[in-house]
Length: 282
Image (cartoon, rainbow, N blue to C red; front, top):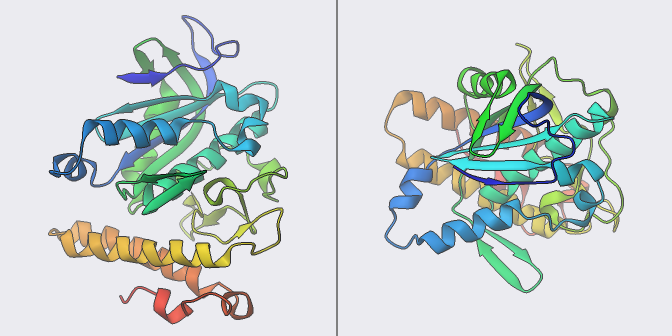
C-alpha cells in the first residue's frame, strides 16, 4: 500500500489517534486500468496531483499538513487527526472530500499551464470520526471500519455519506477563507450537505460555488462541469448490465437533476447551456 506521510506530531505512535476518516470507492477504476491507452505514469500523475496541496486556502489550514492518504485496489482512504479543534479537522476533511469528488468526475482539470486528464471516476464513500491507527504500512481502526460500512450500506449511488454522529456545528454556514480561486476547492453557496428523509446525510459536491471574485465569477466553467457530469452519467448508464447497477446510476442522475433544477434562472441565463439541456432524461 502506497501512503503519503504527513507531519506526525498529532498522530500517535504505536497507538490509536482520534481522527476524521474518509473512505472512497472509485467506480470503474478497474476498467480504466485495463484500457489500452492507460499508462502507469498517467495513473501516478493524477493520483499525485490529487494528493498535492496546491490550493492556497487549504494550505492555510494548519491541520491540513496532518492529512494522510492511501490508495489500494480501487479504494482510497484519507484521514486527519482531531486536534485542538475537532470541528476544524472535520471541516477540512469535508472540503477535501468534495475536492476529490469534483476532480475525479471532471474531464480535465487545469492548474497553471498544465492540464491533467482525469479518468472520470465517480466515487462512493463514507466519512466518520473515531479511533484510527496509521503507521508505516498499516492502517486500521474502528473509524475506518465504520466509514467502509457507511459506503457499503448507505451510499447506494456515487455520493459520500457523513455519519450522523459527526459534529458539524461550525460548518453549518460553509464559508472558506479568501483565496479559493481553483474551481475544485472553492467555497459552496449554501450548505454543503443534503439530508434525506431516512436520515442519510451526504456531501452536496455539485452545489454552485462562491468565490472571492463574485458570486458567480466563472459560471460558464461551472456550466461546463455540469455538462460533463451529465455526459459521465450517461456513459455509465450505457455500460451497466445489472438492474442493481442501473438503480445506482438512476439515483446519481436524480441527484444531478435536483442540483440543476435549483439553479436560479437569472444567474444561469448568462451561461451557454439552458437548464433543460443540463438535465438527464430519466
